[in-house]
Length: 423
Image 1 (cartoon, rainbow, N blue to C red):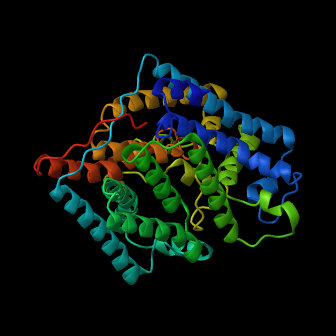
Image 2: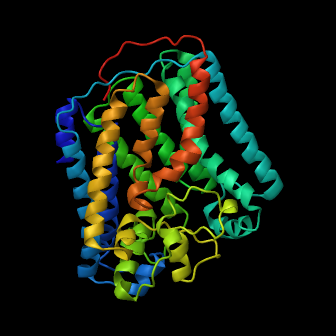
Image 3: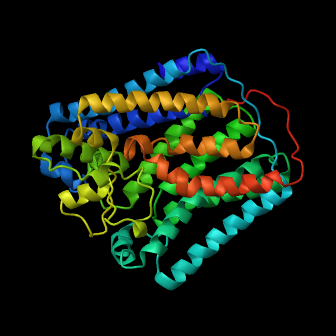
């Protein structure tokens, strides 16, 4: 419904569209976990999320949780469509950045890479750590100075933004064979790293998604069939690489019930759903953690987000385990269905206003990168919290794009390319 409605207004397949992608993410979290369990005959294996193993929920309970994710997606999609009423796509291909701005982006990428290389040599910490040892490394990492952890966390988020800017620069030069070769080599390296290192998949998946959206906006609009096939291939690769990091028990369809990103978020919601009125109250500091942007060093109380509260609830705090909380669990702790639907409506409407505003700004590569970042991170609105993107924007995105925009103001005049509908 949302895809057709937006496509009618954009007169093209809505690829670079934050509302469509956010709703697709919500549906993926709703459908994939119960579908895998049903196809496996509701037979849980030793690699199934331990919380689902402990709950032993039946089909009716699983359907109830899945329906909450679905209802959130529908509320979001309906509000998004209403917010786009009367809007017509403008589009445009981003112009080139000035030479000093491009040099600044490359310098930022080199500096962040050098920081993490030095961090690995001095502390042993790396974002590319193997999955099998990530728990032990996380526990050791908690013993390092808080300021170092804060800086590395934000720089880790910044590197995706800088890489998207550099990728946009390469795509604007894709017609030149030498830059096309660099582009292809970079993408191949990014795609292979999680398989070779058995490390986190998220940075690679987000970067590849961002590259596809930038290609759509800069080079040429992508056909619907190609987008769907590429999306399914990326999803399958994401799940297969995750399955390769664990040892399956049993045989046959056991892989379908194995723990993965989607099952983890679903399990959190199912656990909170099953606890019902037995849940202890959530501290106010955890409820407002996304908008509490003051650093811990300046606060008189310890900062705690919702996932910290949940880990403490299940006795996993301080063990190196990390679990996102999710918007469904967040609503269940609050006012249930009423809060969930209200969150979906508010998020959908806000995304529609962002889309309308961003569509008029795509003649700038920096604005295009900001919008692409919002598109690929929109799944966090389901996975983490309604306001999950606020601290990420403040500490990881705006510093990078703000600095580049400041340099661009004083840079050489920007050469513009012909403006044509791109999305």
